Image (cartoon, rainbow, N blue to C red; front, side, top):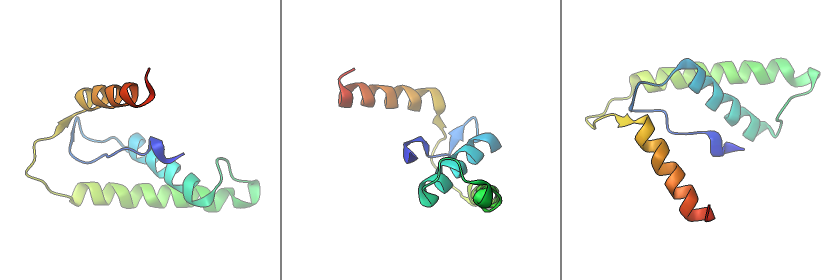
Length: 89
């Protein structure tokens, strides 16, 4: 489940709120064990996703680095190459 959580810091173009929301959703799914919560747990689940997304955006805005931003396309190509080597595709 958590393989979809990717590093979001120091990329060009910068992270979008949708990407942070998606990573937050994956995190809450992983720690709760729910891919889709029951009606009884839905409010707590969605509140947790929103809270984690807000805190994550605060973190990403506060972090500093002297390193040059990574290129999203180049990093995606590297990931595809690693997967091909790992899984023999």
